[in-house]
Length: 120
Image (cartoon, rainbow, N blue to C red; front, side, top):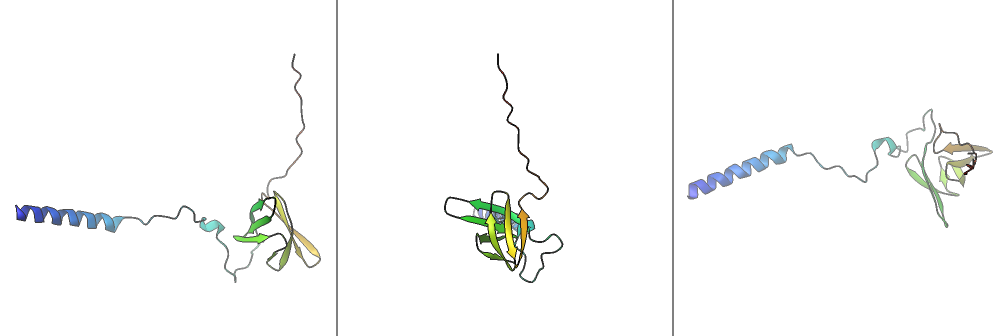
């Protein structure tokens, strides 16, 4: 009986070790994808320039996430100062010029007509 028990225990241990060696590490679900990870300090903005990724507007504060860096209204980013944050864009002042970063650069907003339906 002792031989059978130890052989079964050994087989179970070997099966567990084989499964553990093939296991994949779990990914952190809260970690942002690498496409939105902040750039290294020595990396340039590239041809597209800085990218606005998110805005947070509350009663007491306004924040923008630009290239993975959270910047408050009045804060500095890439040599400029954030002078305006609204729901779809951020304005950076660089010297005398203003740079506008759009949250959805390919989307143009237009007013919607308010059409009232006549009901009989």
